Image (cartoon, rainbow, N blue to C red):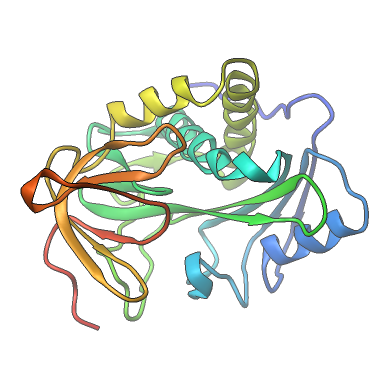
Length: 251
């Protein structure tokens, strides 16, 4: 399959051999006045991070990518769903192999055959209606200490084109989903995400900072929150938390 290496119009791409964190660097550049479409990829991160300040293992061979996007901060969280949808489209395009097991895990992970292969980290730019969207994709098998979830990779079992091509594919897919979001609102993104959501209508455990909730993954709220149904039929909407669909791994 031929995959284009063209960026969306006006987007700027840079790749560096090593950096502490692509998100941290793009946040710094955004604070200095950079505009939407700045794209930074690193071959390796020395201080990669995930949600809630967790470290993200960042050896060579995987994709570490951050993109600066304009978004009103009051609804910027919806960009993470556009990012997840773009990740799915790009991975499906550039790999050969069975992708039937590729699914979305709330709020912003991609799962392949039950193991996490990619994640999205969204960070707001202070005092600006901008967010940095960070992508981490495990292209090759990667050891992760004290992982909350099973960790997988796109290989072995698939053949992946080179990392810049995957990065460009993500950029084009993200621009497409952002246009749909800006033109039509969150509803079409919500529907597409739900079509391949892991664990929908199945038992779920949500770990919050001060409590754990058991229930059923009922739906996705109009703003992207996770709706769980608890005992007695009561519903609760969760905006942030760690989600488990099987017994939690002890750490």
